[in-house]
Length: 198
Image (tube, rainbow, N blue to C red; front, top):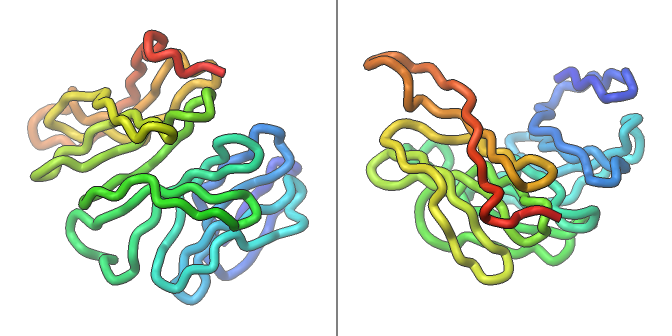
């Protein structure tokens, strides 16, 4: 894999490096790395130095990670025994940036995927797959566990991202695609009434 870091340094290696995000203070780059079939979370400095593995799990495949704040990370993971299963079960977890204090946030069966934190430090958006194959976006509180459904469409709604001020949600959807067409388009939703800002 070839990864180009913001400073222009390019890292070349023979492993899978992907799903990159940056800590709020800009001091760490967070990413997924797969070695010998094991997907784990790693972090490094913006210049590519000080690479550190955060998760060390044999059964869980971690990825899609973001810093909630400079100390806490949210991510999705699946159990390797479920890999390649249709409608693969996934759960959302948090962990401290040093790898400690791992907590499972979603416990219900099914796919809970693509978490993205709100700037309030409590909420996050994520994708839940409802039966039979309906991808919808939900908002969840880390403190209370309360979930609110944000999208209502029979087509795919996914890849949610909240704006830095917590007022807007961007996501991709196939809701306006023609019959038989497999195209996603970006959408913007006003979520300012949910008070997700810093």
